[in-house]
Amino acid sequence: MPDINKILVAIDLSALSSTVADYAVYLARKLDAEVMAVYIAPSLSQYVGFHVPASSIENFVGEVVHGAEESMEDFVKEKFKGIKSQGRVVSGYAAEEIIEQAKDYGADLIVMGTHGRVGLDRILFGSVAEKVVKTSGIPVLTVRPEASDNTESAS
Image (cartoon, rainbow, N blue to C red):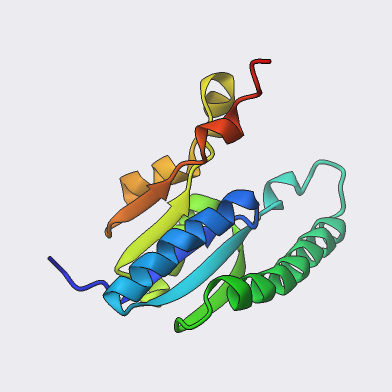
């Protein structure tokens, strides 16, 4: 089995991110690996030409990235105590950027969450996790949200 020295953790700064980070921390401690958490801000470049000035789109993306950088710094400090770790925020298409960031970092493993989309949601939005699993040259550990988080109470 190949050594796992670097783990890339793809997070979206949602509630699931904490659970995904827990898996990465567990593995990093067991394998004496370092971790890089990455958040991909959505690229809005596809909306240029829809009567929205490019400068407005760039400003919006810049604000999203700036806010995510602050959140990422806090997230890394809180979740990855005692582990060699760093955080990075980039913008682009999530699946493509996760693969690219893993290559740039020299990751041996990707850990990421799924949102468990089904039906029309899955057709319309696809699955970032599925795209990463299918195109990654390294192993990918996917973490599904708890079933109770996906369904409403039957009462």
